Image (cartoon, rainbow, N blue to C red; front, side, top):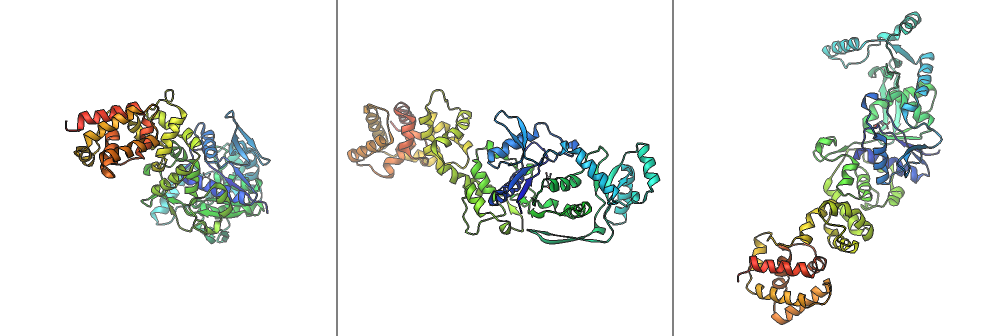
Length: 493
Ligand code: GLU
């Protein structure tokens, strides 16, 4: 069997992190099996259209590196075009197909016109609720005569088309994650298939499209599991074979609620802006609810493709753990190609006030190199602007003040200034080490008593990235200026 899977987003304007995982699992499964991964846009709910939603979605998917073989994609000129032999891939471009198939279901007795008004449906539901029953359509229009139907249609009465479920029948299917599912049709509603506006509902469109697009596995969030029996029956009504179903448990927030905007970032774009690397986000999200047999946690896309399996998708919901995501992102930041990482960091440098016209690329690279192991996200670079660019020193805390107050410090800092001023070229980290070594020899200070006051005099802080590297980046002039500042403001004369 050819593996053909699809990601079928509604155009909401952004990709939810949970949808990224759904798309990714589809993609991994397709690639593992030399299959095709398709994007189909499900825009049948015309009340929820968002402008430019498709391009926003495609940009996020391209950024994440989860790109489709068929369906809409964006050219280098940012034009949206379709590729693939099973289009159109946007549901609103497929209306005649749905109409034709809805008519077919009516003709073969598997669907019927329903003319009930909203008021009537509300009243029926209200009545059922007051009787303690689960609200469902009461089948009022199932029994209209052909004459009644024709007269209503001719009079132009607004109507929908409903699926005509048989009474008291067990519908069974096997889900790759949930196992066998059985539902009695008495517990199901006669689903609306075509709406009054002539658009199909999701439930009709999804069956028709998955069939004609030759989808082999429907891999989606388990919020759709309750709709699947109706879909299974619809396949049967058309005389088609249903695909295999794989319903993924939802991703929960740390407070065990549905991951929603109220609980923090949920859009892929939010994570991009904060400086998560696409490789890291994809790696992390793959691990929410799935893990490889060998327990490996840092996996490239090709490793994910090789190791992914539905059997190892957990049956219970995964929890979105930002700390773990940060750890994964940090692992990628540590090991990324320095040049490429620096490029990715540039917007954050500029945003933080660094001047790319004044400083060289090599200078920025040095900063990235010295900071990378401390960064969980690229936007954290902003916190280090002062470390490299300030002239004045602010002592961070009591500990810093204590270091500067040590008796030997003023003399030692003066010697340090002399030695830096004696250098004939730009100070390097190696120079710094050399200078400190000679101070150690000449003045007999060592260890903490040597390094800490120097660090505090130059940065105001007792902790921080490698001080020799930091001094190289700051440069001779500014370092001397800072030490003088410290001497003037914090050292006893
Ligand atoms: N359009 C649905 C959604 O946005 C997709 C459901 C499916 O994959 O069948 O969640």
